[in-house]
Amino acid sequence: MRNTSLTLVAALLLMTGGAAAQDMVRTTTAAAPDGALTNQIDIGLRGTSYAADSAEARYQRYRDLRDGGTVDRFRLSKDTDAYKWNLQADHIGYRDQRFFGSYTNHGNVKVSFDWNQIPLFYSQDTRTLYTASTPGVLSMSDGIQSGIQNKTLTLQNALTGASTFDLRTRRDVATVNLLYSATPNVDVAVTLRNTQKQGGYPWGGSFGIGGAIATELAVPVDHRTTDLGTSLEYAGERGYARVVMIHHPPLPGLASPRKALSDAGPLRDVLVEEGAELVLHGHNHRLVRHILPGDGRMVPSIGVASASAVPGSPRHRAAWHLHAIDRTDSGWTITTRVRGFSPGSDEIGDIEIFEA
Image 1 (cartoon, rainbow, N blue to C red):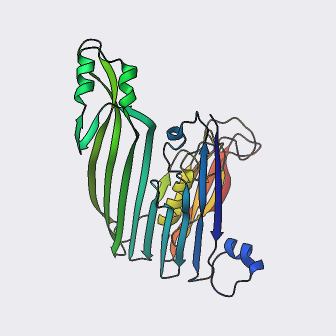
Image 2: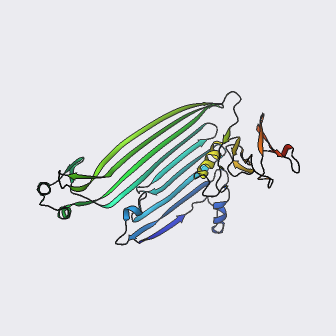
Image 3: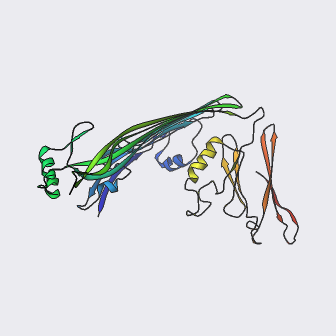
């Protein structure tokens, strides 16, 4: 099987006025000034050619690669000290399109919307002896029925009159999230999720009793589920320190790909968006310190060594951590004491002390 694809994509970066051409790379990589728009749109033409023995459905299993014009990527956002909003779209007009939007008024409200289409292409050469004269009603011609019943019609001859069709389903998932800060210590959260699945499942059946002929049917599927969830988060009069504990490192690149979190990137984004006072992890069996830019403050991420490690480098030798979390007028202070065998002795003491 050989597939050959040709993709022509034009990328357009829409920047604020006054940016010179030679400044394009620096403008797109440097931090945008307060209130600046960050815009991006990728448009182009796409075409794919298939060899005679290619499995087109398998090549496009969970995506839509039809030929034609494409708006493959759209990004538009704005971030200020008071608010930020973000609009995104991918593969507009195709079966695997996605739309996303969010708005945050810092300290007051967060709202987001996500609509994601997920196609499943089973086969492009499914054949059936049935026809659907009306939706949901499958029928077979009298000639084919009598031929099968009398065993005067072979499968090969019967399939000469079978109709070919694409067998596919599509799942549409829409999610709305709302977080309203009623007071500095009380948050009200509402989540609405609607999932709809339409199309046809592959199903094999037989007609008659003895010597039956197998045939494929597209079993229609059309169902919808809607989930509504609400919650009330109360932090107390003085508030609580948010400590996240996880086994694996919460950032990409801190462990080998085979042993790392598959969703380390999304987890990092959640920590940056929602914030936390401290993130604790293990797995690497050594002291690891990183800082994440959280919601209003920096979020320290600290990895601990193994308590049963043999003597080795200062970062790998056996140790445990004692964290002191104190509330101050300006926020939280966190002091970490790395405890273990002191260098050159059998006494347990402070190996290192630092403030996160």
